[in-house]
Image 1 (tube, rainbow over the protein chains, first blue to last red):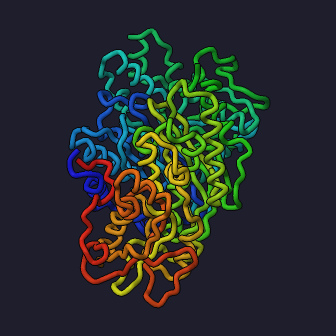
Image 2: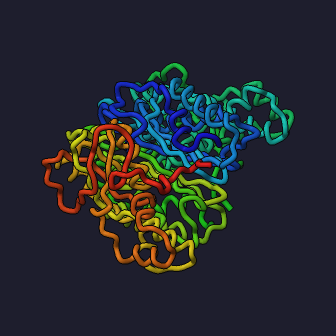
Image 3: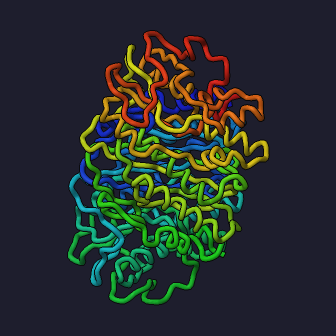
Length: 309
Length: 309
């Protein structure tokens, strides 16, 4: 790649917009932030061939996705996302435009999610690897953990469930349509701002749905020492997912309940809370442990495990 | 690897000690920190085959090094390092003990440097990749950037210069001795606490030396719009480096001034400041631009560039 490491860094960081939170942006040993209240910190790595493929995801989409999946975790705590740092490892010989397109995607998603890119790292590798750390501020509010759900509460979701995994199935079959599902796999539509909204509405527990709704709700139920029952009638199966199911013989519930990479939010609310706009009631918190679907045990795959045998 | 992703995460995070800064440690969507003053944030990725080789660096040493090189950047701002998050991507089929040994190294270096491991990410990859983000707090003090050096000031270093690159040369020749140099390459001895000490003593600019002293001082000089002259008489050439030079015909100044991966600190101080213990005066800040060694232009390699042609 032309120009060397420092020239590439200059191109990535040129004319970056910074929020008032940023006391010192890229270019020094560390960024300096002035955060309002406690800080939320989360990190996630995207690896070529594992999380994405170059022929399925453009550099622009990858840049967007790397920011989106991390900011989503900050949202899921009820914090306000403010900053990201991006570590990038690239093969020598990558086409010159790759970095510029990736960088444009990062900027696009930073603008959408309201965060500033404050620093990063650039190095070599055999395959493209992106690691983003996102930081949020609580502005005096209390973090919404996975452990606060109580029996009698309602379970609600916000965002697009099953779209990403259905899109992956489309790509794996060699197709590019339904386009809206493929695009969702290439970069999830995170419901920015809704974590904060849910926290303000009284959410007692919340999570980013990244491993599949059932798998992640399983973590929430375990942390809260409760059981959860999901009601499939509550979900609308979108036409696009129904079309993929018709073509493949797959069940929509495999995508919606166990798909993964949704980056939707799932939260629990007291029974008397009127759910905020955009949130859908999909189940109930019960005494006991474990998950059921329509009061029955779930028979399908549980979700994503990177090291499952 | 046995046990799957969630079992591995449980093993890595079991019984972690947390500082009072940590409101919420590993296990949720994000960690929650209560920082004292402004925050320093920095990230660095280590890639197998680029930054380390499995046959030269043990998992324990890699765990230590990944923390050390990041905490060093927080120190270089004059901040107090408090927290790290660690993203780890591992090949399937890695020996079972690897993660436990890596994790032990991470814990060892966290203890040495005074930081808590507050979160992370675990996924698959073809080759081992570690990305650490380190966070520090300023506790009311002012960040020491690269841009504050002024003509007439003294340049000083703290830490081991040239040891790591001389150790790499030893390994590349197929040897394991001098051991102290090899060990320094496998994991640098970061002068923990000295960034804070330098800031309190009045350091006007400071950097972590990671690309080689001349290369990094070049960045500092550029940011500060000054020139720097280094005096080689100021440095002691340790016996071990002298032995490597005798065996290879290399100049010690290639290691000491341009070696890289030292993770020492270089700082500038007003002329009338008595340097803190452990700091060595090695040169002067001058008007103008660029670097000289003993008032002459440097003829050797400038330093490390991941994408240099």
